[in-house]
Length: 144
Length: 451
Image (cartoon, rainbow over all chains, first blue to last red; front, side):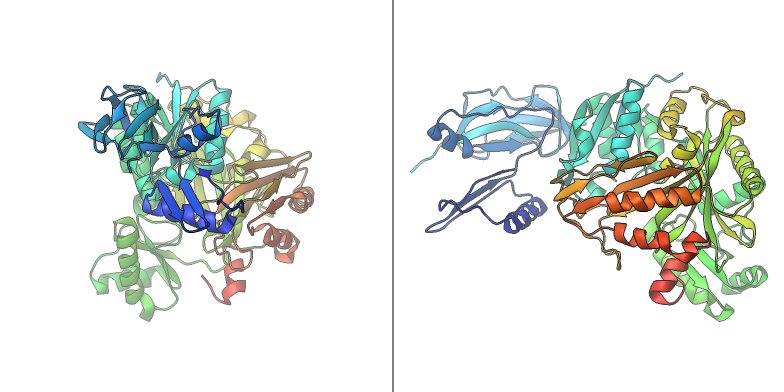
């Protein structure tokens, strides 16, 4: 889990975060964001996959900020990942099919949750993928 | 001979870690599965491949046989170690594993089914010379008059038990004849809900029994050995708190006779792997209650006294190898105790999940700790509250108790309440010291009546 401090620099209280994360897990929410006049909180639950390195170390503050807004697209099921030909640098539109997870005879589509740019491929074609394991990282395109 | 190269561990917590270690000793590849709530499990760092199989709810992860099999197929596992709990005694799962062409590290599904049904297990044990309580040898009929006739013959008090059950569910104690039919009816309902099998049977109820069990190992070549007995009488609500080997105060020759009978019965029914025959012991008599067709939580107690690595042997047996030793060389030595350290309120035993803030393991000669916890580990609320097993070995019972008391004092677990403080007191309890704790002692003290 990555967690971000609020803009005032005060760390978010541990109990609150624990409860929030528990609720997110319960309801299957991967991202939680909250903003008011003096607080911005973003909590992203990462699929922890010991086999896969997220390999992200942005060099600059801007890059770090962009990376923190990235969305991890997760496999909806335990199965075999099948590529849809998308790779790093590709632009995607919300609801684009960006891959599949094969569960026996079923082939479940994995769709882009937002318009954006694929910044990382986290699963290789024809390899096992876990339930809710991250398969792509997408940097959202902010449209005003 | 089946070839096992990769073992999928269909479990979590300390037992998953224990199994990984045994696999590594044998040079086997390992696959760890975990639920969404369990990504931080310690054994996942040690396995060759870790894969998330489903959401936190056990019914959609560790209890979902289809998902476990899918994970095995996806990761190229050729054997599945079910550990204890979850799917470890589910004959349907065992059969599905066999049908998939994989190896379950445990007995064949047919034998698991035979011993999983308490009525057929009882019949098989009686036929093979294992002592059983007076009771019905079939499911109780529906006709109330027939039920009364059967139970009046056995005599009161008696206990109504679920054929497909365990863990205290679907059980009713009947002290007098006029309580019988209501008890049978409610036990049937509970058994039907809990196990999908409403069949119940009855046995004579023992008022002050101890729980004594025999650990066996059996291979596919007809060899079976017993490795000693354990006393697990310190229980609350059918959940064990302290286990020890050997059982105090029971003559060695009685245990030996029973052990031989169990090993013999295991070989006769075609049992393979590790298994435990459970008995109630009262007035000098052993009475078979059930067989656990899997590894037990308390197996380390026997490992400490016998020197046998039970998990390693289990895996070797699954490869088709004969037992690596014979009964003639099995020698038990000294006395061992195990305390199950649960994240629970030590008085009410209510589960208390939370985060381990600081963890310091005790050590020293004869001290073993089987645990998956570490500083910062968050105990999920979805599963069993067992977080560690503290096992000690001493030259005799008094020595083992001293070592356990010292180890419990040294143990430090901050962040959640645990049963350790209760176990410290239990070790000083005059009834425990005298070796006369029965399975009802703790519950009776708590509620003032039988559980």
